[in-house]
Length: 123
Image 1 (spheres, rainbow, N blue to C red):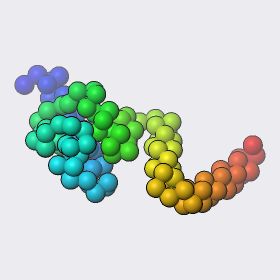
Image 2 (cartoon, helix red, strand yellow):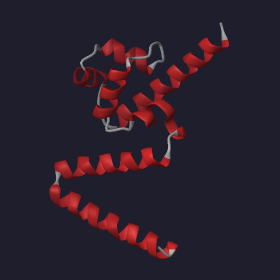
Image 3 (cartoon, rainbow, N blue to C red):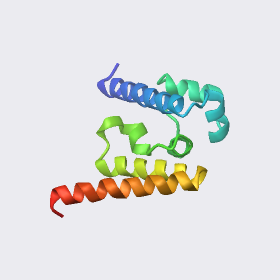
Image 4 (spheres, rainbow, N blue to C red):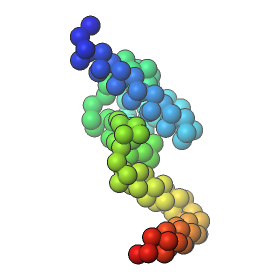
């Protein structure tokens, strides 16, 4: 096996593990994810076990369904802080769309945290 093949295989396995972890965190079955992304359940199984890599379009759909930045699925902890921030923003949007009152409370709390950080930083 070539080194490039081994690297690709390891990346596919790690990406599959991250997709599985996010899917389970969202309490979504492989079947539900497959239906929402419009692929077969076996495609999700093969992705999660690292047997295959889906298209970029499919990965984008998976990221959207799982409310995860695609960079987090592909790179894991290697993603940039901006990607982490976008994940927080996505989660806030999700909460606001489900319960506007809870979303408003979340925003107010987040503003207080930001104010405290800025004051401590002297900004």
